[in-house]
Amino acid sequence: MDPDLEDHYKELLTQWKKDEDNMKDELNEIKKTLVDLKNLIASYADPSKSTAEGNGLQEAEIGAETDFNVTTRDSEGKLVYHEEDQVTAKIRSPNGEDEEIKPKHCQNGNYTLRYEPKSIGLHDIVVEVNGKALTGSPWRVQVTGHRYKALHSFGSREKGLAEFAGPGSIAVSERTGNIAIVDALNKRVQLFDSKWKYLRTIGDKGRVERRGKPRSVAFTASDDVVVIHYEPDQRSKMFLFTEHGQFIKHIGQYLNTPLHVSIRSDDHMIVSDSGDNSVKVLTPDGAGLVQSFNAPDCDSSPTCAVYHEDKFFVSYVSANCVKVFNKEGELQYDIGREGSGDGELQCPIGLAIDKFNNLIVCDSFNSRLQVFSLDGKFINSFNARMERPWYVAVTKEDKVLVSDTKQNVIRIFN
Image (cartoon, rainbow, N blue to C red):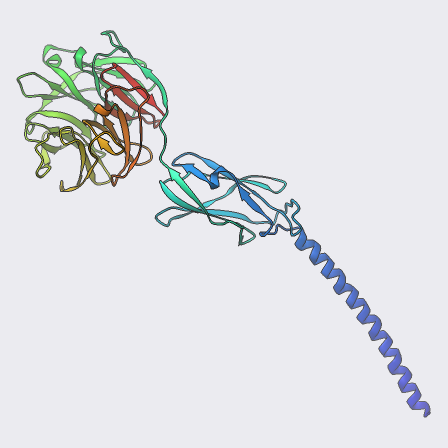
């Protein structure tokens, strides 16, 4: 063989062996990389093996914190935790609004997620691990209305301080949390602080102010106290006192027979007037008439009127319903009808809006309180041995106060 050709082949063979060795090294590096990658992947949570469970994925109550757990597992189903794992969840309300649910606690791949639903109805909860939804997601959760529970009662039937005879209208000061309660048969309004310490009696500073039985009480924005007094065979009168009980003036220029007064957020007075079956809005000082309206085709007198979210909610005892008017005083719809079933009323009197943006109605002759959404859907009812729930109010701590005019106590619910 040509020596030059032999040298050429030897050189090619040597180069081939070097290339083969390099390829082996590269192959080993690739194998090692694949093993490292496999181990790396195995160290992360596998969405198809991870799970979510707990009461919070089955049922919930509006305004009450509930939770569920997410357990992350690797591709072999083993419990795993890696700081790069992403566990996310969101809850979608019936009106389509999404809210993120963030993990509150994690230990070795066990995550706790807590949420507090803000509306009633069917919600969807989506849970993802590393960007992929878990098996079973989304979960459908029915959120129910808050169930009020009785805490305790306050007062008894007597004439002493912090005792009552025919307790009625209740008002809570937005500024101080003080509580004013009409003590009708004792012809006075008693004032307490937020801890139920007796402070004073309103309307006992002179003969004029004491005449008749008080029917309704309200706090102004400056904590003056408005009181309506009922006088047999005479027109009821509305008086204004300081928070210390000093008489300021009489309010009555545009009123006939006022039954109830509440104070709007802009400090205007809302008065139910049985003299002409109207609801009237007065200026904050009571000296001017801003608005007056009636329920069409209704002979019943308005009893209690409150204003919320640009609507007037007004109870009509004889009509056994609550009528809802827009801010112009135009009737929009009725809540409730005569009867004793769910959503039916017998002598509805006191009204209040609770922290969940629901309407609480004193269903007096059915001996219970009923809770409705603002559009009139029945949510639930509660009783706690009440006989004649007359008026209701909500404190700054979101407790519900109810006057039981037959048992002469104030019942407190959380």
